[in-house]
Length: 181
Image (cartoon, rainbow, N blue to C red; front, side):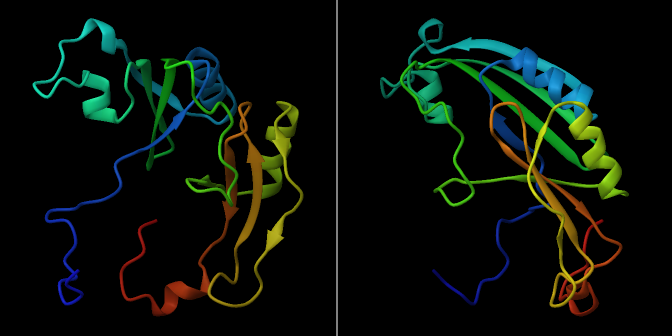
């Protein structure tokens, strides 16, 4: 790798969306719209590898394009706030797959953070909807994240999510790049 070339991907603009796989697309759309506050933009599918032509190299379409052989899937795209596009996937096949989301410490572990104006009010809202909210808040009083408060929670399928509240974080004063907010 040439470390002198720091340009990255030519023409890169920003992260377009994040995606989660869920076991029930309708229930996930309901949770992320009714509880979180997203808006459903569209749905696609079902896409069934068994009904699509094979690729020239003999692989099925899903294996060639999304690295999942013999897949059957449906997709919904949501907008959450002004900056997050959330793509939800439901796979009906293959039936042999991990059905538990990774923990933060596992390879592929992840979470999505939602910035809120009032952390306490947001937590109260989640609790009213029987959402599992982790202990907290975690308060950062010093260091690069000074001024940050966070609280983690889980969606109904165990995907880890986070609420964050801050005006500015300490690292922003000396950041080498403009911070998008």
